[in-house]
Figure (tube, one colour):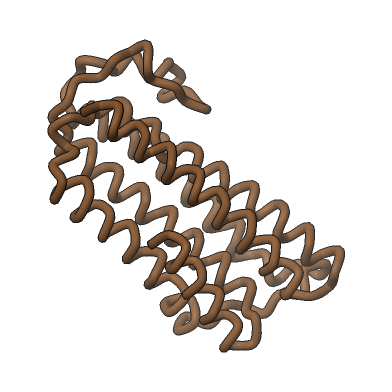
Length: 205
């Protein structure tokens, strides 16, 4: 499903003359949906967290994530929103001004192309939530704090995707170079993150 969603986005930007900026915005919107789905998962989680099994690339409100073990799901979800949203919005502002930089030969994204590029990416996460998390009753085994830290690798993968993709654009002076880097790096990161999420889901059963 992940591979198909990413290939669909690639097909859209290819059809519309390689609009790299549209693909970047699509990836950014996908990351926002990942955050929204994570909040839904946290609020529905019924499992118990194991503090020794919680790993994160970042602190939450300046504290280790395991400090939230035992707190109500709503408090965990609020902490996630406080830490995730401002980073996501900052990335959005950065993306919005990229086409206006002289060293970046990117065409400003067309809203229709962004929507088409993002629809498959968004659908894959919504489908995963309803089919795997709700349909297979994973929420009965997952703890809210483990879900609090789970999206971090995806977000930092987006940041690295932006850095490498824009670097390729600046060097090659062509959006095609950026798209090649974006698709390969981002799809690989998605597959790795999904694999880890599935392993955590199985281990919690």
